[in-house]
Image 1 (spheres, rainbow, N blue to C red):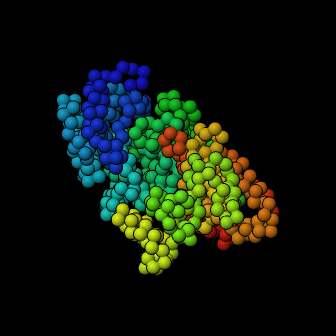
Image 2: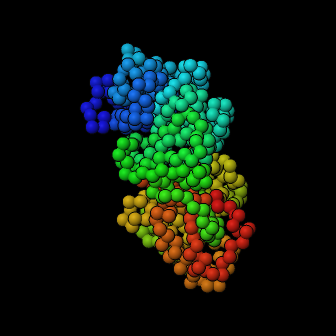
Image 3: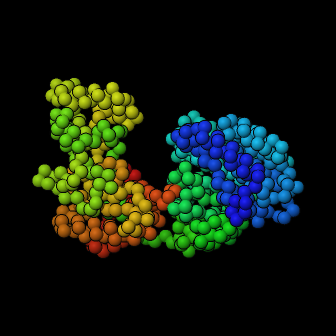
Length: 526
């Protein structure tokens, strides 16, 4: 633990955790969102809880996703045993839960081997005044629709807030736990920080602002991943189960530890109600709604196409030649960003990219019978794809024909979708000037000039380069503030987030461009 030797109970728990983790594959643990809380972090969280509770207050403790009991171990280390009146935990996986029952059998912890989301909340007299939890980080696409409906109904019954359909399992845990907390009880949640910015996080933030008193959010530096086996940026969220007071301010801290953060700021609840991006705190002093142009006013922004299987649909010229496949069934596609050393892609006389690594995308609109008659070699390749199960994959089976691709014409500007802030250039995202007829896969965002901008560029092609230079001159912090961040400093930018990046300078660069209302309301999601 931080600054102190690990206790004997914690040494036993760590040995058990290591043995149990070895009994599962990383894929199995990832699917169930099983990432154990590090010892030092668990201790920091319980020390922080102790500082917020009265010195003589008896503790009724619960962890709805207890695993092997890292938080309970820290509880015993931080609080005198006489103060712990009750301690309970839930664990759905007997692989971890059954050994944990034996580990803590004589230590006063009651572990229930049950799905917490199915459990019945206790009576008022049995509710808990300290809830500490690192809930399972299971993404929404691992939750079937029927289960989402059940979870949403139970969470709404518990806390009065409906969760977004894209919410991960941890969001439902948060809502469901409301019914288990005593009035005035303290909760500390170790959860992914992405809820602070993403669309599905709106329901979580509504709960934190309207149903409880949000006390403190500590966000860890994304370059300091808390879980070595999970690429996720974490936050600790503290609140009390009591109605928020008028004029309440929330403490935001960043970096370092809970006890010694690098940055700190108090933010009024009224500000948080208006601001969709909470990760700007504590760096920013406040949120100001500025009436200015954004990139979405000038560009329709779409994610690059998802092929269904890049290794099958994207081929080199040599492979196309070797298989005698018809070139008219293919169109050029940009390689991944690591194969684009420069931010400008030239074109040859046919419009193909002039690159060391040239790639082509299979995109044929002919029906299979037409392919069989006209292009036997391509038909054989398609049959090979069926044998490999490519045609049965989700994206492919929802296309007609299954080997036809999304409509993504070449874009004059493309932006990388993922990036790190610790690159040599210091710029996590790159804007690439594309002179070719190459489309792009979903590792890029594609920027198509809206009608008014397209007219200006047609009249004055030289402005295309000036626009590109402007895009690459956008302050990295502005870009980072619009996107979301994951563990290890990995940043991601969705089409709508890129569309909301301020771009008032474009209006000055191109004074003739006045986005129409129709253009302003265009789709940014792509």
